[in-house]
Each structure stands twice: as structure tokens, then as C-alpha cells.
Length: 553
Image (cartoon, rainbow, N blue to C red):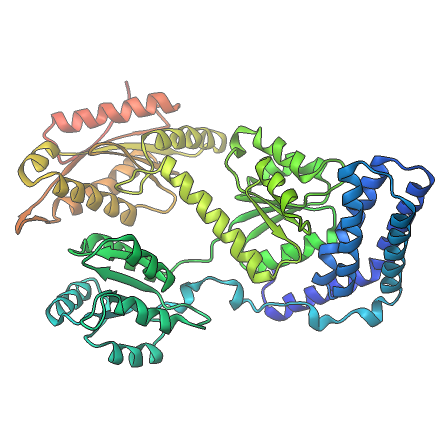
């Protein structure tokens, strides 16, 4: 990890110097390959020549040689045409290829004069980070309905937000210029125009380096308004009457401090200089990076590193990126991993073919550092989101039944390997059917969400929580024996029993029962799960609202 901007800039400079020093050698390889091809025209030799030229196409501009990239791309296109048509170059094409190689040799021989470090984009560390640092807890409510705006201000203030209301767009414009990192709750309709809020935000957003975070609120829900809101930079569109839980969830997600996500990125490229360049950029953005120079050695790294995303070149010796992507897709653990081609290939049809054969995206070299970081971040986040739909419960966001069972199996194996304790607990909300029958299913859902939030807040980050089904929860507590787990869960039980839930101005409280078992007495996933369920049954039988440990069959 590179800690300072100065260190990062120095590394970028040294990589560019290294590229310039090795450039004559790289062009000499191209010349040798071309001479071999002239002696005997064979497809493997042509493929090698094309790959060598391809390597200069993207890296030239990256390391301060824009003219090199221009010449290399022109030569690459000529060679690619011959490969695609399985043709032998005619005399005119041979002359053209020779001329391109001479131009490359001239640039390589004059590398010191050609090299211009100012053409290398060296981003600051801040520019590689996300928008989180530019958002405050200040909320601007913009609505001409004074009563509705004031009520929203009051409700949000209960949750610790600093809220200010504006009833005229002119007043809001002045305020947002002074505090552009405020979050805006903008009503869409105003007396002068049914889309005045959207139009005002659209004008304010123009030419801003960091867009203002705006949530639109409207009495109407139609596609035209939603499209207009998106164009004006909306992060959400809520319809009246406002679901307060949904709004608070949105605001909490925006304002909660977030650490820079340390995604695991695997890069496969046959150029060490290019690997080092992209590695430095992604590490500077807080990511963990592994690089592989030889695509034939990727399997061991892939299995040990377990990356969140794979970046690879299309043209490499031994096997192509497309072939390698197909192999990765055949591994059960990596069926859904994002695979992004990072290549100087600019032909759209080739890109489309590559993505149709196991790839997810295509980034064309040279790529600006901030664009690389953004592309990796968005791809991994989307993959994680899609995965969460498969493994997470929709109401609580916790692991679902299948996922928590899978996690239990993994943690049992891990604990056995490390000889560490592990406890498994089953929780069940007492008399939950009565809650639904008396206060309604919406109130029941709120009780379930309340317990899930309490569990996430009170348990450690290493503990794993899942919704086992209905009103039942499961908890895996690593490095914890049953007595210690029981004490923690009993404290949570006590707090939960004292919480008040509200439904139509009626307050009520709820309790839960819990059963705990540990690996010391039940060494496998099946037995510990059954034991915790048995302990839960005993807690229910003894009168509910208690935690029971089971230590034998």
C-alpha cells in the first residue's frame, strides 16, 4: 500500500522511466517477429506479432508516449485484419507494416526526447475516493407547503438530523450555494410549475464537480417525473404519504461513516509495467491487489486470493483472456464473479464477442485512473448487490435460511481447523402470531426489523446473524463458548423486552426465547443446529423470555 501522494507520484514516474528504458527492446522484439513472418508466413507468428504490438497500443499513452500509441494502434489494426481474414500480406501491406515498424523504432530510439512526464495522469488520493466525504448530516427540506415541511423537519430532528426548511426556491438556491454538501429533500410540485423542483435542481447540478445529493418527494408517481428526477441527479424518489422508515433508511445510508471498501482485485496481464501501474492506482484507492504476469499461473492465485473482481487483457501468451475467462466460469465458486477485460482493443465487434464469451465489461486502455477505480467499484458493488438478493432476507437484510446454514458449515470447519470455540443460537419471538392478529402484519414486520437491528448493533462484527424463517433468527458466534454466548444474548433479550413498539397510537412490548449450543458438545453443523433448536424448545416450554443452554443430547 502506498501511503502518501508523493510516494504514489514517484512510483508513477519510475514506472514511466522503466517503460521508456525498455521500449527499444520491445520494438526490437516486434522487428524480429516481423522478419520471421516475412521468412515464413505462419499464423502463430502473426498472432505473436499482433500481441506484441497490442501491448504498446494501450501502454504508450499511459506512460507519456501518445505518438507511440497512435502508430501502434494503426499497425495493430492492419495485423488484426490479416488475422481475421486468414490472409498473407500483399506487397503494399508489407510495405505499410515495415513503415509502421520504422516509425516505432524512431520513437523508441528517441525515447528520452519523446518522454513527457506531464502527459501522465497522476491523480491525488482524494480524487480516487468516493462521494462519502462530501456529504454532511445537514438536511434541507424544500416545500411550499409550510405545515408539511415543518412536520418533516420535526420528524427528522428526532433521529438526530440538523434540518432546515425552505418554502421558496429562491431562498433554497442561496442556501445550497453556501452549503453544497447538504442533503436535499425536494418537493417536485410548486405553484408556478408541476416540475419546478426538478427543473431547479437540474439547473443547480450543472457543471458541479460533486453532485448535490437530492431525494425528490411528490404526490404523483409517473414515469415522466421519475425520468426528470433521475436527470436532475436524484438518488431516490418518494411518493406521498412518505414511508418514514424508508426515508430514514435512505438518510442513514447516505450519512453513516463508511470506510473505503477494500475490494480484492486480481489483474492478469503479460506486461509487468502495466500490471504495476494499475496495481498502484487501485491500491492507492484502498483496494487489495494481486497481479499475475503469466495467465497459465492464475489458478492457484485465484483459489487462494478469492478476488471480488478479475481484470485481464484480451491478448496474452499461452492463452487469451477470453479462453481464461471461460476456464474461470467453469469453477463453481467463480460463476458470478465480475470479469472485466482491460485491453487496448477498440473494435466494438471484438469487445462484444469477448463479453458474450464469459466477460462482463470491456475497458479500453489507456484508462484514466479515476475511471478505473470507479469502474471496479461499481462492478463489485453491483455483483455484491445481486449476490445479496440471493443470500439476504428482503425484510431485514440479514442472511436468509439457506445462507446462514451455509455459513454455519463453513464456520464449523474453520473452528475445527483452528481449535477455537463456536456457539450457535436460535431465537424466536414469543407469541408472534398474537402480535400479527392484534396489531396487523405491518406491525409484526416492524417488530422483526427492530430485533434484527438490535442484534446487529449489540453483537460483534465477527458474529453472523440470519433470519431463519418467519419470526425465527439464527446467530453464529465465533471464538465464543456457550456460557459467554448466553450472557451476551441474555443482555440483548433484556433490552428487547423493554422496547416499546407502536401501532396506531397503541404501545406494546415483545419478548423472545433463545436456545444456545456450542461446538465443544456438538462438533458438526447438523448436530449443533438440532441442539440449538432443542434448547429453544426448552426455553419456550419453561415459560419463554429466557435463554437456555444445552450441553448434551
